Length: 193
Image (cartoon, rainbow, N blue to C red):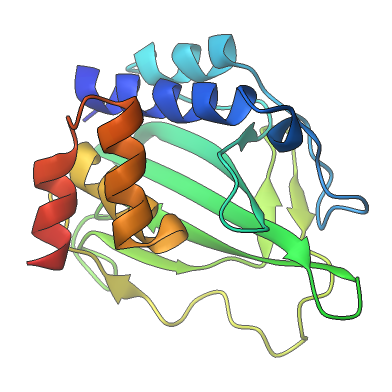
């Protein structure tokens, strides 16, 4: 499930986030305890075919005034090869309170309710050691529904769906064209078709 293009794309995103100094600063009073991970840890997970997850969160390039963080999990559950990209997007509301939301982008979970490529909301973030609840979410916030089907059938398409969801279609195309030699163009275009 982890392909060279998926691997190099995630490493490219991590490099983009590490370049400008403003992206290195986390918002104050984050919604979850951020244990930053590094590219070596990300590479370890990408290359561990037996299953692994990042020991913390990879900071992604800024999305407007908000900072996305990624937690990657790859492994087998019930004999099924699975991939999970959990993205928390953190920012300030109009009163200056740090708020955020998180979504999980996943491969099919076998036959049953989630047997398709999908994303769904998240109430807690797993940092590689424990689940940490997101702060400031309303008590009614669901984490089991909706489960939105994605136009994906492999890891590159799942990553492309995540990019378009976080950054929008135009910005995703521009980012990957300018910084990644347009290698994801076909995947991103397929989402908008």
